[in-house]
Image (cartoon, rainbow, N blue to C red):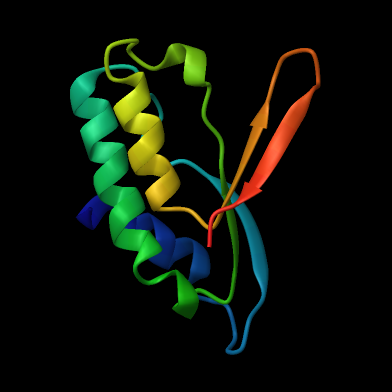
Length: 101
């Protein structure tokens, strides 16, 4: 968390208040293994609880197919608890979006 906090502060530190920003990010570069999934979910939980103070939008992208199959369902369920909106997009281009608030 400390490392991710310093990255976020470096990116957002120079923004003037009030600020509006859009950012595509991912805290952990790979979320294939159990410990990577756990680390990603820790970051997601932490930042979701303070999201109202961000003043912008974050888009987190994941390839669900890369997630370890036995942990995939639990990971998706926890991920959805820590986001306001989810967009699922297939390789074909078909997709669906959910407002989770």
